[in-house]
Amino acid sequence: MRTRTTGAIALAATAALTLAACSDDSGSGGGETEGGDDSVTIGIKFDQPGLGFMEGDTPSGFDVEVAKYVANELGYSEDQIEWTEAPSAQRETLLSTGQVDMIFATYSITDERREQVSFAGPYFVAGQDLLVAADNTDITGPDTLDGKNLCSVTGSTSAQRIKDEYSEGVNLLEQPGYAECVTALIAGQVDAVTTDDIILAGLGAQPSNAGQVKVVGNTFSEELYGVGIPQESDQCEAINEAITKMVDDGSWQEALDAATEGTGYVPNDELNPPEYEPCDM
Image (cartoon, rainbow, N blue to C red):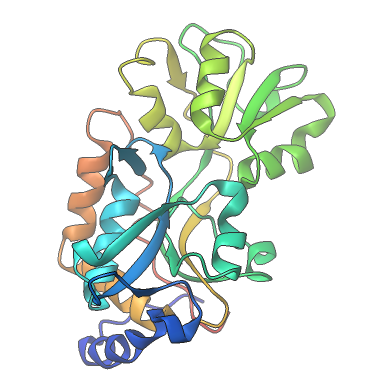
């Protein structure tokens, strides 16, 4: 059972305690900048428009806005955040080796991942879907992939689900990033791309892709986006309180609306905003 609280006093107390957790002494990847100020290192995606996207040295997207809000509640200003790219296949390693303090990178909470890392949240629930050519009428869901060439990203839950549940008749091509998958789709090298619906919507709305691809709109999973943290971290409760505050004050909805504007994406209102899971899971 998931719970929600709004204990501002608990947040303040926990946040104060967790400031030290991101220092060099904690071994969790944080530390001090060259100027001597405390900093926090956050992993995001660099190639997911609307979620985690890096243009020059400026990150943008829903994941980024949630990360900035949480960091601020933990006592870090935006200029104290060090952004690090967190590809799907490297997220557990980045956390377990202390290269990052937290990861906000469309990081689905799974039991398998909990064996290596911990999670706060979730802060959003997406669903796995398919991206196909704009004129494709054959592919309407995962049950219509028999004999098709499908692209997903190495290390993602999307790729693993296809392997586990639909692999008998599907030819799966794994790439390091979804941009490469969309390029392969437009070039006719694959018949579909699979990942979460909100990711596909952002990719499909890019000017270079618009009009050439479409999201099928038939989700077949629930993906709970969590905040990845090291297993030894004591930040979970404070992060959950920060996410709750972001939802309650309207900032969460504002960030989501801005991130999905123009993409045609409609989030599942029955699942969003989600209630966070207990930290002792």
